[in-house]
Length: 228
Figure 1 (cartoon, one colour):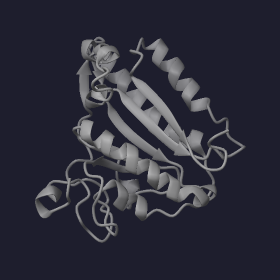
Figure 2: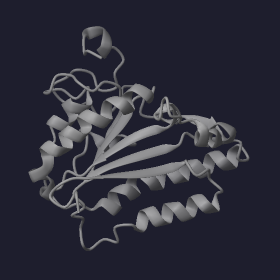
Figure 3: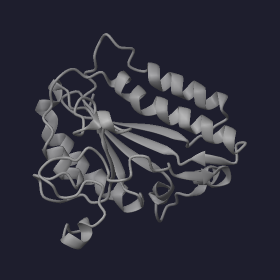
Figure 4: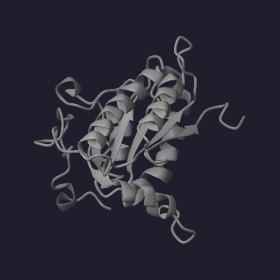
């Protein structure tokens, strides 16, 4: 998709020289929900002809490690985004979300999320923040990688909201499943228990009787150790 004027109409992060504090009049929007039956059907949604079919029913979030150690493989991250982002955008009809371990969108303290929501195009002007590559191009890796803490900031609110929807609908309606794609060299802060949040999330989902596809986390490992 090209980024002409018509394509930019209604984008949550319009073509501006700086990132706005959040999507205009959309910071309190309602999360996407699905019936339990539809979520359970995702187990059969993919097929040989179209292995990405299930992505139409899943919210995709890219979580990119932008810590200091990622400087040496930042170009590799860009290469991965060029492969996976267009696919995710094609099937996620409300656009993908992009989060970084350290970088925050301008004005994040005024909004409910610290990243970029509903990004619906891959290419745009590199000095703007209306597209995946425009956002990526303007981030500089620095700092430590507290991956577990960052995952907690994403998954804990999601699980809390999921539990509320289950209780209010008596289990009939669920939040749309969430798929987090993590891109990292896995040089994470040694002071953290790297998998504490994932373990806690899995246990909570089991307690709530969540479908197997409710939350997924995929890791793309980059850097010198990626092939080991």
